[in-house]
Every structure is written in structure tokens, then in C-alpha cells.
Image (cartoon, rainbow, N blue to C red; front, top):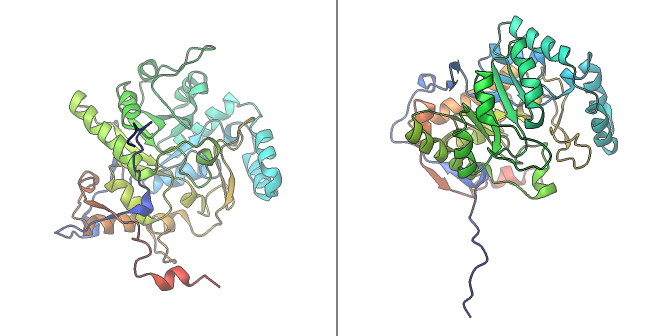
Length: 381
């Protein structure tokens, strides 16, 4: 007998389930524009380096800025807890897997030191780089003024899931409109993955939004608490919120797809889904300049009660410049990411990132296996 549904379930798509359709006109890759703008800042390449301790230290932030991107320094990581963070990072890399979670919980129990915040930001600014820093909502009120006084340029407020409203009996939560007014600097907030949450966050006055809950290589949020939306669908939803808010207010809020991007193909699909920029973790953790020494771990790995991250070995594969600009020494799409993006834009008739948003997409779960018998089976005994 027919019966009422308890709830409807929406089909959602990740990077491996869709493909881009070539355009009717091709464009020379070197004639494409891949700039990314947030507030008054414009960056030559639309890639942000994730605010994770295995990826961004002061030296990496400076190098990444010189290459045209924006690296985000974690103000609640080892860089601001320890005078000699390299020693701590070496210890993390050498620790056996069975002991690494307890070690990270111990490492991140060390208090954050205000003088180190000022020192790290000062070093980045002295080198002439744009300085972006990341804080969690819990610590924003305390750390943001210190970072601003030290010279930060862009503030990123980041947690596993961020909403414009928070319910708590114990404290008055972070009020984003107040933060925007007090800081008077560009603010990027994340993470979220739905239209309604993104639109409400945009209405608080922020300048950018991070999209993605649980897709990162070192994140276990989806396994631990079952929460997340595949990145193509999440980006489409948040991009729709951006367009609605633009029509409503005249203000353009940047959408940044954060996590789950492993290859140039994933990168290109994120832009076609509506991203203005992407934030990358594990691909950049493989750079020789990355402080993680071939390892990468989730920001929530150190949670004292419910870790939602893991340490993964990503290896050290190439220089940062080679990963971004090539020439590539591999055929799996993990190097020359910028070349891949420009080429994809060229064959899809997109001269700019905004035009890339209009590229037709198709549901194609066989896109990586069709005709690829020898590639798929070459490593099978």
C-alpha cells in the first residue's frame, strides 16, 4: 500500500561523478585569466593553501605569495605554540601511527603565545607577502585583535561547520556582523555546504566563504559524525547563494571550495561548479617546502575528546613551483595544476573564472574508467 515518506533524500555528487563538456570555441591557455579577488586584494592564481600545520609556516606563506597564491597560517597551531615548531613537526613525522593521536593531543594542549602570533605575522609582512591567518570561532574574539595589531591582511574564521547563528547556554557566541565592523579587514568564513547557511553567512557582511565539510584527505568528520555533502553539490549550492546575495545586495562574496581536490581535474570541476577559488591541503603538503615532512594531518586530529582528523603519509613529490606550474614529471594530474586549469578553461571556451562557472557539466560516473582498462588494472596482481 502507498504510504507517506518520512523524508526525501537528495542525490549529491562528488568530483569523480561529473565531467565537463568542451565548448564550441577553444582558447589559447595563456590567454585565460585565473585571478582571484577578495575585497581589495587580487591574486594572480585562484588557489589558497590550507591553514594546516603540515602545510603553512612563515616560509611557505612567503613562497606561496611570491608564486601568486594566498597561504593561510593557522594561529592555533604549532607555529604559535612553540618557539621551535620544526622540532615539534619532526616529532609528529617520526611517531608511530598508534601513538600519533595522543601525541597531537599533547602538543596542541600547549598554550597559544601572543608574542609568537606577532612574530609569525611580522615575518610574513616583512617579506612583502599578503598575510592571511585562520582562527576558530571560539578564539576569534581573543586572537583577532592581536593579529590585526601585528599587521594581518585577511582573517579566516574556520571550523568544521560554521553558521551565522549559534545556540549555547554558556556563552555569547561570535557575532559576525560585529566582527566585520570591528576588524575592518576582509573576512573569510567557513566551512559550510548548504544554500541557506551560505546565504545567511553572506548577509553578515563577510567577504568570502569556504565550502566543504569533511572532504579533506586528513579529515574524518564524515566517518566520526556522519556529516558532509559531496563537493560538487556543496559548491553548486553555495554558488547559488552567492548569486542570490549578489542580486539582493550588489555585493559579490567569493566562494572557495575547500578540500577533496587531489588532481587538476578536480580543480577544474570545482571552478565549473561555481568556485571563485579553491583551498588545497594534501596536494601542497607534498611540496618540498611544506613543513610536514611528507605527512599531513587534520586540524581536528588534536581534539581532546573526539578527534575528527587523521595523519596521512602523502610523501614529498616535487617543489611547490612544480606542483603549481610544472613541468610535470607524472601523468596522474597532481602536478602543474595551473597548467591543467588553463588548458581546461581553453577547451571549455572560458576566458575567466566567471565564464568557467557557465561550463556545461554532465553526470558521468564512468568518466575515469571508460576505456581505461589497462590503467585500472595495471596495478592489480
